[in-house]
Image: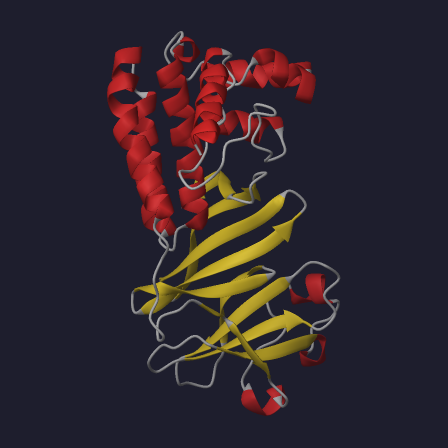
Length: 303
């Protein structure tokens, strides 16, 4: 055990001295085989650690990536990467805060906190400011990342999708077709071009149905229809989604919905909140896993 500890300390010291610090979550094991965490693109690697060695960035991603690295560094005070402690803490903050947004069961809250604190850090004019602020920020991100949500039997996140409806013509009398975008994505505008599913959404006085194209063609088009007791069904969710999950939190008496769309570069996550009589997208981001299978949020957009 002592030998392993000494070896780890020597490796950590070597990494800091060589400018090759690899940010990690507190529960992960560090590997110094290369300075990259394995999220894929140069832009994403640099977003997690703007103090990556220029030579390694060029060798891994080409000369164009070096320009991206310089642009990222220009956001921070001069010589930010020459101070080993600041460079380490900055990488730790960016790495752990992006993982926190991807992992948390409160993405709207956590994304707002992370973005606010990052803006405060970006406002620093000198290294002293960053040196003062970063340690507490890193501790907060790691602490929250390590907290695994504990759910009771009645409040676990569940899939929106329920059972396939066998007689949609009877169940959905009054449905006005085609749905928005149905002909484009489903190849036709009739009820026979669609599959209808019950949902696990529970809102007093309302009924919901999930709708998908019968022939998908890889587009993953989905709608959620709402009926508030009248004759008419209307679309309150209209998006492309591989799956949707009902969150444990509610806004305006409606559960928050998380939508997941598998893309070539990762999973596009959309957080939907019920406002103005329909579900509105409040937050979106792309989740990409690193080498250790920890997801990170990139391309974060707020409404």
